[in-house]
Image (cartoon, rainbow, N blue to C red; front, top):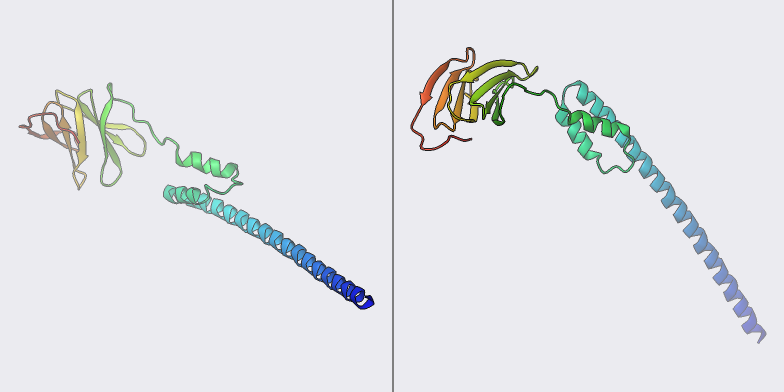
Length: 191
């Protein structure tokens, strides 16, 4: 009986020792996981800050596409600061407003070099604008219907307009002079 009691006592001591070792391992593992989580969060914070610095640099280089890419990459970061929202607003700001048509605009096109914009309107005109300033450069008049489509030639020297009046017209960009009228469409010309 005494041997059985000693044996039970030894088993209990061994079990208690194993339990203590397991508890110690669990605490150490929990501490290690907590530490790893803190390090992961710190790394994310540093990456976010680096991306916002890159956004600043891209903005200064007028690379709005890169700023937008960096914003997309950090959109899921839970601790975004005011700077993220600042760059978001900056990349979605209105650059210029083109004012001059008296009716709604039906079509818009950039010149191949990006220096000019042409708009076609329900006011039966097309207008050429400076893309950097928004200043009106030319008004192309001659259609008797809405100007539904506009386009620059590949060399940027001519504009073609298509209208509800079933005519297409070719214009010289430098002077605004009408060069050619194309007739024969059975309905409105659209883009």
